[in-house]
Length: 457
Image (cartoon, rainbow, N blue to C red):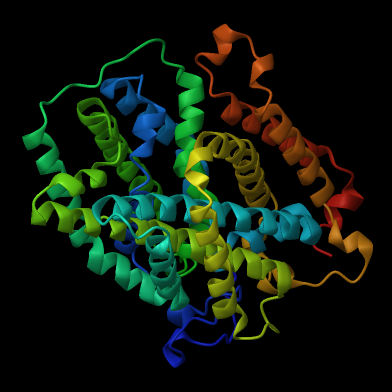
């Protein structure tokens, strides 16, 4: 097992995190599996999560349950492996991607995924602004500004504070949603959401995965790098718990919150039960406001990785200005809040579709290359090397990985070419990503020896 030796600034010596994309020193790798489950469960349990009930409103409650189970089974293996990768080498996923997609490819993808994180931040802030605007009307964009400032301040202090925030506010979150669910079932007659029309199983599995597990999985190493490194003495059960905790947290939240949105939509015509707070007694209003915690939970895990991803564009992890990370938190947070003001929520379905077409092949190729190349056994310095020649910007296997990623995106967006009888049952975006990943792996096996030998130069 490769041990990481580095001396980045310790969070204990600063009021805000300045670690950037440097490897996390072993002395600070103490996050437990329980915290992983809580962090990812709350990150996924956003006030926006019930919108999946709106998007999938015609499938009925029982089918919604099964489509989530299918999504979990399909996305579980790559998600578990990504969680483990962060424990093997404590660096963020977009630094890992430099070995697969090359320095140039990883840089371009880092910019793209920074925008993705900003889009999710804006999406959730938009929902939060609507909740506060419904309860306290007449204040316009003020709520968006307040939410943006508070969320930026939270991420400003880094993962050490974020871990405590998640653990300490988990119970408050559950109580707030519990109160709102109580009022929902007391004030409105229960109506079971039933299937209306044909359920597009394949398309719906793709949608769930792009909304939940595979939308988050590539960020898992960014958090699990704070967990203890795996050792030879570690039991298989303990290792499995660390690998499973993020995935189970994400999908448990999506199943519970999505079902609540589906039920609320059928009973009230409104998927967002927090908006019921405008017509509820004092405790209902307080709970609706408390749901803002859910937005902070999710957006912290949108903005924090987005900042570290953007840092991967501009720094090698060693020579960066220590103030760069705090500065980017502020800049990117403001940009993301502006997206909320512009109404990004209205573009959610198209946003999720494009996201799935890109993230699925990116994730699968990254995982396969990591374990095929045994990068976890390499010196950590190889992930931070600078490109001195043009060829080093696209060193092997970058050209092959980028080509297969592009093909995967094109195939993922070509669902119309698939026969309808097949598309009805097959999650095409997942299958097309798996197809290009298999082709990618075969290409690695038959690549000329001179290319394979030069992969770590």
